[in-house]
Length: 394
Image (cartoon, rainbow, N blue to C red):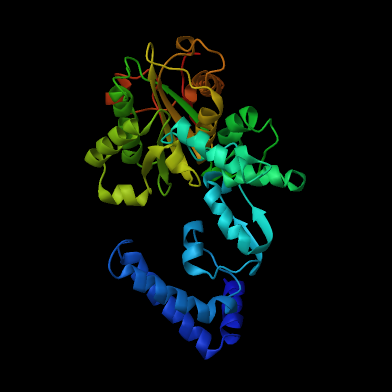
């Protein structure tokens, strides 16, 4: 805080009255342009006001932080106008994010090719073919990296293949929570560095809950969703609760439809105060990229006879994101046994085996307990005390 205050003071002292006035104009112009409809009658005037305000102060502010889409709107289109341009979360950005790099003398592109990339799901193959044909005329050496399903990170690591630096130290997750991703996606190269004090540690880090009778109906699994919500409500009702003061996230491993069902059930069972206190967020893997929570609850959704294989790069990225969001604990809710997944390379198979093995390694005396309502339906009880584990079949 002291360093930040000293930096702000030094920056303020170096600004002229004209620069300060330009910054205030900028704040006002950004507020106006953000509230105006893009095609509204006043939007052109607001954009003009924004550009004029920036002209007065752009060169005087040493560091600008903004989303890539705002760069062209807010900063002068001058080549090499910055000593360094950093693009963070580059694996989420398509090649449209290249444009801010034109303002750079040096470039730093930060991303992870193992996480969710842009999709071409709504772009026809014919349209992609037309785009590729047009790019061929540009003589760009890496045309395939400019197509819709590629990210600016893919492009950067191809163009600067000899300048890549792999970050190995991992600070988000406790070792048990990152072990799956580390083994399957990072070849064991990550070095987990998070180790909370024993008094604040959630043990076990992985909890496996099999929901007997759980069945996928259409794109949702109602029984699995109910079991997950019952578990969370029971955990929050305990006194003292292991989740006291902790943030919670819920991720569907098979689409947004299950996430919507879970959200609807939670809104009927939890108060606004509980939702806010635990920063509760529900979504699929894509919506959680770049986010984290202390505890993550996972819903696998699939059931026997309704478990299409999840293979390939897209699913690997989604599972990697989903299983690397928890700082201290992950709880898997599943309606499948390992024997229900015939393909040994299916990510569901890998996930079930990892959680079941972790549960089997915990002492029976430390088993977790759910509310009696869930105990009557579930093969596993969950979440209490300083120790604990889940029990499940292989």
